[in-house]
Length: 215
Image (tube, rainbow, N blue to C red; front, side):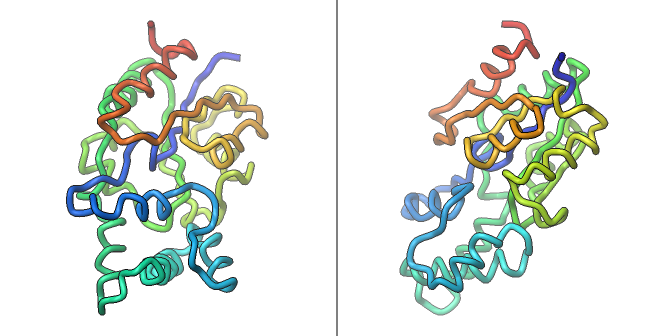
């Protein structure tokens, strides 16, 4: 069955959290933005909250602040200030081929959705980089009450795009989270969540491999 729509993950796929003000905290940021797993240093109660953080914006903020404090940001207000950077559009960078990939998919007549496990509204990043008009649907876990790899969130995205799951390509950076699309019959392509400068053309290569754009 031909591909009629592409679902893109957000963090580590289209965009990456990068900013010179955060360079000293690279290891911490990678842990905080990992799509799966539990951040180290949390109590059993907070570990459960961590796993549910992408379902509720307030929980997302609170559990990140606790994790940041556990990681050493103990000065009054420091953890919350750091968190506010994590959810600020100004601190996210687009991969070099993000705009071109979204544009080419749209020009090919395919439907496009961004599907993200997140506790904040990433639409601000899409608007900042001028790609929001290239995205037909934005499906965010905290808005729909489901988290990848739950098959229901992929089915919801397909329903909103009005396509059969078998006609969909899911592009993401996590085999565990984004790979859940295979359970509903969609194709899956995984890209590495490298620094933006180190991954100039992975999205375009995926689209070429799946015949969406010419080689």
